[in-house]
Length: 348
Image (cartoon, rainbow, N blue to C red; front, side, top):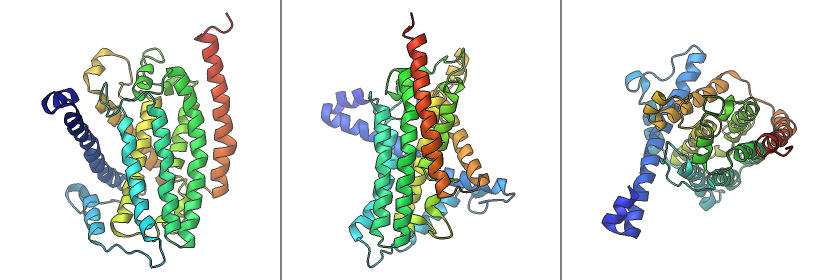
């Protein structure tokens, strides 16, 4: 598509128009998906608690998220008198923007990626690390001790689990021999006999589990939602926010949840590849396989939130630093040793 626009409009303008169209093709469905997964989230919680969930607005309650969005849009934006006005308004914009730009390198199928860069995985790590700035700025700019306390908790939590995630990804990169996400997906083809996906390999299964749990902690989902403890922090760093500024935090949070679901599918479970390397399954477009896996992981996220009680903060930090970090370090040594012996013949 880019070549066609460049041939029609010239290199500069054609590239800009084509890139803008591709961005909108990702961003607009993503926003619609966020609205629908909020509905799905509430329905899953309700089903597990033997309740109905949203069922009034629209058929089966499908328009409930849009009604909530309209309600938030019509509310007044209240800025505390002692808050830092500029930073107070900037924080939700940072959170929402970071949740969107990470999708630029997620491959939806063969050659279906906005930016097929060689360092896609490093880009994801860098962008996801920026999310903590929105949280800290929101807590500090509110000029209230409770949002600030929540922001410190969130920052410590996100940084702690990013360390584990970083070490978990090292074996994936070593095995695939690339940082390119499309290359990582292709490296999972027929990984275990005819099965596509690193997660089916006993060497990688513990890493896949650690990555899944760490992605829940990274997005502050239950049981790791220590930033929103009802007894002392209420809504946490977003307590002082209202109207669309609050909605941007909400959209950013669910955008990050979808991103982590996509990363779980892409890095360990074959991405756009079908579960089995069997020719007839490739007749189904890869984007449908990826979306099916994303929905499965989102169901797991909701399932955990509906059933697992919240961790204490000391338990949260101990899990990250004393359990996940040592295990991920040990697995880096194990998989690098395995590759040296069986792939590169270090003992021969």
